[in-house]
Amino acid sequence: LHWKGMEFGLRAFAKLLQVCTNASLSLMGGGPAEIRWKALAAELGVADRIAWLGWGKYEDLPCVFRGHHALLSPCLHEAEGMIVVEAFAAGLPVICFERDGPGVLVDDRVGRAVDVSAASYDEAVDRLSAALRSVAALDADAYRQLSRNALERAHTMVWDKVVDSVYGRLEAPAPPGASRAVTP
Image (cartoon, rainbow, N blue to C red; front, side, top):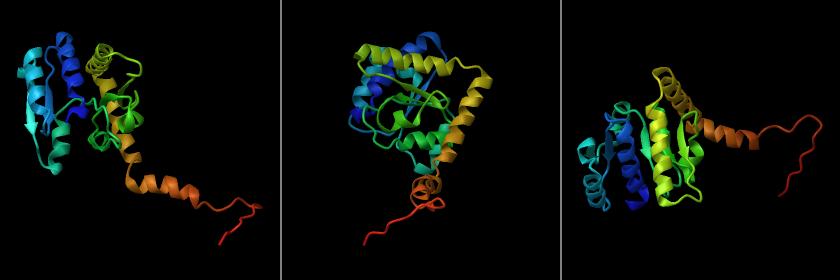
């Protein structure tokens, strides 16, 4: 779908290939924008560096993630960002726009959230490409730390912990000497 933002992703990837010539990109899923994205990839001269994986089984997602270096998710609108959490669970750093759910979940400890506020289209592409380059340029130790941080972030997002962090505070006992009013 167009709001997945891969027109930005494809252009940023083409810029990445200028400095990181061994890079490749895999796209999962399919839909109405796929034809336009394939045409754009051909126009940019990067079609041969892209694997179009189509739709797969949800259960296979962790295996697919483990075969990659980072998740590029340049969504223009993604309320929850569950794909980000799923990538973290596989220890995969995430590169996204600093918007909506993904932008809240991603920071420099676990990937790159690209600020595109007040940016032109070309600036957004350049910033996304810079984020891709920064992750691609990490040495092995720095990348492993980013990956470990992503996995650690995923562990903090386990549903039980999220619920406990919200409701545990709401149901915490009153401190000694405090009074509680009960309303009918």
